[in-house]
Image 1 (cartoon, helix red, strand yellow):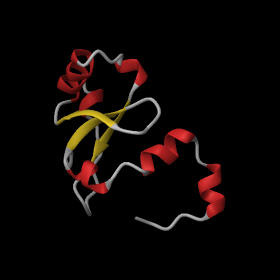
Image 2: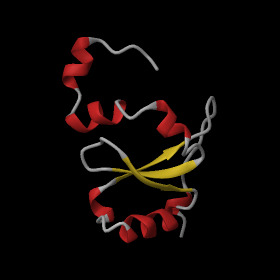
Image 3: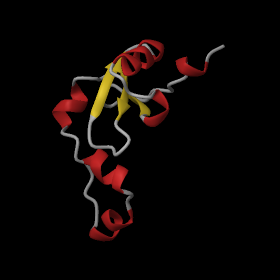
Image 4: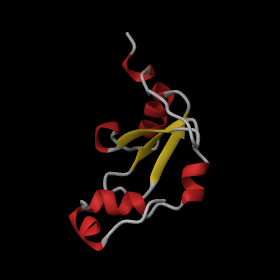
Length: 88
């Protein structure tokens, strides 16, 4: 992870600070998948390779999908364009 200056840290939202504190090992469990991050950014609620299935998992957990942040977790050292959720 890149080093962040105290000034940069102070400028982050609580969500961003919390998201940064999620352990790397937790992120590694979801490589190549979509994750739903809690509204405060403190934890990964669920993950799935298919964003539609992830949405269903979030609902099954009793969480409103409009209250979480969906984010793709790419393979290390690779670039992905996460477009499958936008396909028609």
